[in-house]
Image (tube, rainbow, N blue to C red; front, top):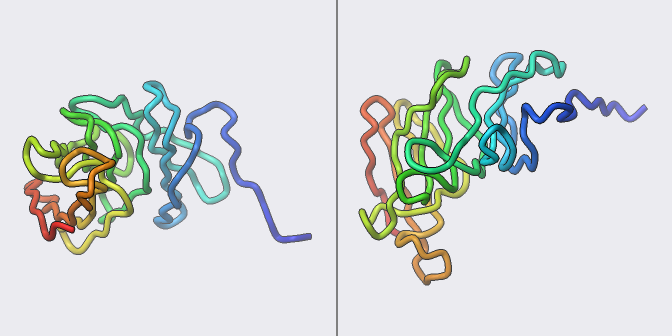
Amino acid sequence: GSGFTRIHKCPNGVTGYVPRSGLLLDGTTLYGTSYYGGAGGYGTLYSMETNGTLVTPLHDFMGGAGDGGYPYEGVVTDGVNLYGMTYYGGINNMGVVYSIDKLGGPINILHEFMGSANDDGSYPYGKLVLDGSTLYGMTRTGDGIVESADCGIIFSVDVTVAFYTIVHEL
């Protein structure tokens, strides 16, 4: 044989659909996101064991204020919490940075992007990097207009106090 083994097929939609990110392996647990699906239709965050058992929904994204929507990339962990971004959601629907306990529960919004309203960027894109208690990431645009010549920003978020800083404007 080829050595290929399918460990999961979305039989009940718990893991959503259209996964756009890689998986995070932590011990024997895989963590993943899907861009669409879940109760709100704005994507999901889930965990499963490496043998495909114990598939657990951790969060169904609902979009809008107080939640994210359309997770474009996967999550990172500090061993206790998962950290991620969504392309949509938040007060102005320009994306959020969030944390959640690895076992699930409500998400904690660390930053809601406001675009030109706060000059803090919009539509987070790509993968987060975690260094100690600081997350680094980037946004697709700085002003909230995807078609503009604005090239976005690189930012940091201190996860202990949810303090957001622009590191560099591209």
